[in-house]
Image (cartoon, rainbow, N blue to C red; front, side, top):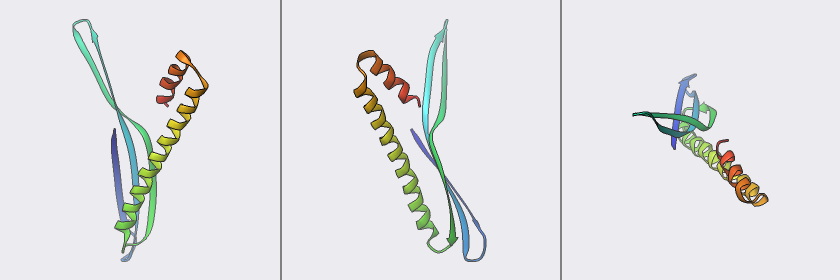
Length: 110
């Protein structure tokens, strides 16, 4: 898993600025198989979660506001993942055996 942060800002006056904060959580997928004598390897990154925030205001203290926004975005990701795991766990308690395992595998890909 990789967390990518993109932060860009623009001065709109001598004392005010606008900053865009983007957080992406990426998941690395790797696939390998053999086609005859030749191995075939495929790797990719897919976005597991993404969110963006727009901040504007006085330049003084903006760095601290950006830090706080990054923490809030990553906290939102963690909360979303915990809620997802809780939903999957609820499905598993409702189902038994093979059906539960298939439900678990299917839910992970969402």
